[in-house]
Image (cartoon, rainbow, N blue to C red; front, side, top):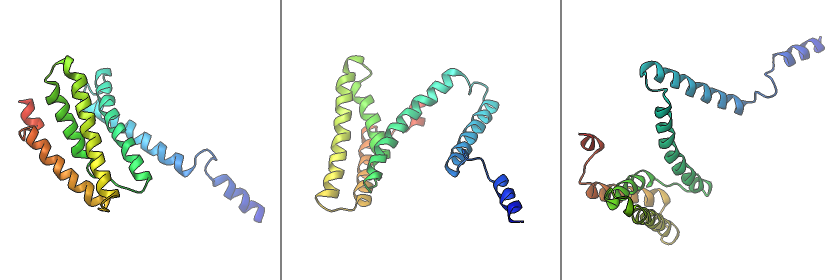
Length: 162
């Protein structure tokens, strides 16, 4: 009798390759495919090669930011200043290049310097002055938001499009 129960339990198990982690990945992949199909059904040009490339370019920026945030999280910290530092970097890069290719290197160095400076200030506040990381980076987020809105004249993307 116990042999029959053991056989029934073994046959009802999931395949060995389908672990809980792999199931989660499959669910996420399936959801992404479903959303892509839904987008293609709603917007005819959504599945075009140009559209996919544009989405991948934007996703690459998010991936770089996520990689940086991963290092902060791995050491047990948190950085809440990322959104407005990223916005400030974008605005600074565009405004300092003045739309000229010859100024691109200068604009890039200036932008990287700004990002490094903000990171150094966050690090000094947390390490040297013992300000909690949440407080320091949230305060820096507010400072960067104010500086970015000041530098851009408060213009939003909707204002840029018109």
